[in-house]
Length: 465
Image 1 (cartoon, rainbow, N blue to C red):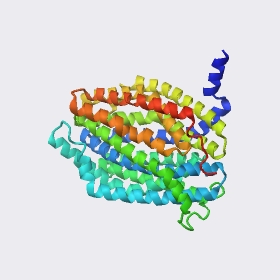
Image 2 (cartoon, one colour):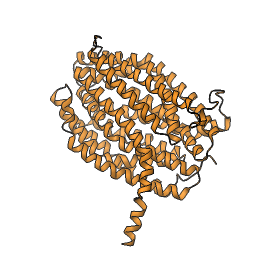
Image 3 (cartoon, rainbow, N blue to C red):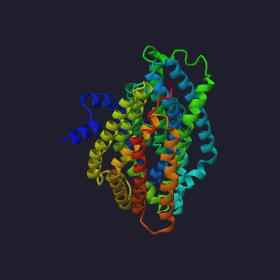
Image 4 (cartoon, rainbow, N blue to C red):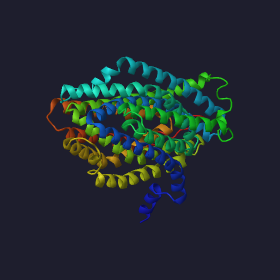
């Protein structure tokens, strides 16, 4: 009995603990939830036009997803220091990390624009090699090119938003990005309806209308966050004199590069790995792209729980490490991982029950719908596993163990997940669903590694003292 109580104390917190976690996590969940829900509606609107339009947009979004992950990795490297500087009550340190983010995000955005301008057609065509008619492949490529051409200018406000929202979250301010995200997604939703279908006397622009709506919403979101942050300097002292210089101290730059480069590479290679997995699945036919798009869009709505709780681990545990509270950081981390897995088990059950109804919202054939249902059900079954892996990743990252996270995340994808998908899709006749399941099962190895690393406490360190 005493052993049971001890175990409960290790993994279950009190009311004050869950209140603290939810104050951080819920605004992130709301923002991500509304964003993904409107993304779902956006996806359904495009899916109502036709399968080729939906697939073209899905392929371009897969490519832009790699860029978004590069930005996430770039700001996260500096963000480790931002969270710990905030725990140390050091606004000048935070200010310097923001300047570093500006430099690295600008470089990544420039490289991405050049790559997509000059090689965009080839990258889209890479996903059009499965079974299907040449006419369908040509139409998918055409719609993808139309969508991409308009989305590129929207990378600039998106990049600025990532710099500011990540900094605010690392300082414990999650409400402003949430409010801006809520407003932006409603702008996106309204403009989608008007521009995709041609309402209020405007022409029906289809995928181009969807792209215009997305870019407009990103401009609105970035404007709200930047203006509010600079107008409330008492709440955000790091903006005081932020742009008087863009110089970053050499010693801090070196530290961030050492800690942050593995994160940047990790997100880049992980995103590329996900794109490669999708390409492996697409070998089974163009219908797979459409089914995966439906499944991923719906899964993203449910995944907000473990994503928000993972972000909360990085913020809360990072601040405790910066304040030197090592034992409290370990205890908090154990409880947060347990809470994430438990919460996602409940969410997965709901997703499993509702799986068969979501694909009915799309204007596509029955084969695509059936395959999408099975993809959704498999994703639900593996959600608790992904919750544990996500929380473990952010635990290791909060203590600056970025080389370990690089090996744990993207190297694992390329050394285990991609070879499984490549071998099974090219050299066997297994149906795509079986290939998808085996790839998820490969993560069992990763779960064991994550459990050992978190338990050993290799991440318990202060990197700003």
